[in-house]
Length: 56
Image 1 (cartoon, rainbow, N blue to C red):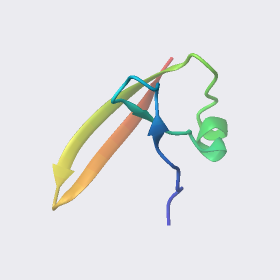
Image 2: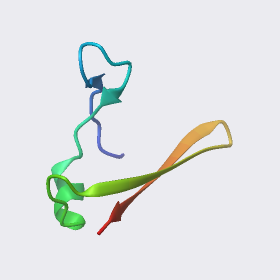
Image 3: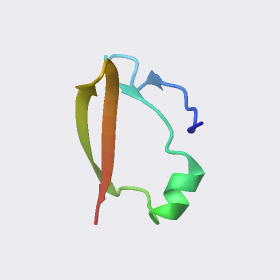
């Protein structure tokens, strides 16, 4: 099974949500604060598929 994270409001006035990147992913991709991530989102077979690519 994959990692589980919890969504929270980005700000009190925003409709955006945020979550935490699990530490295993941070270590595997050597992510640092302020790194950029590219998100590809699509539906496949009734599931939401999200591909996140670090931009270095």
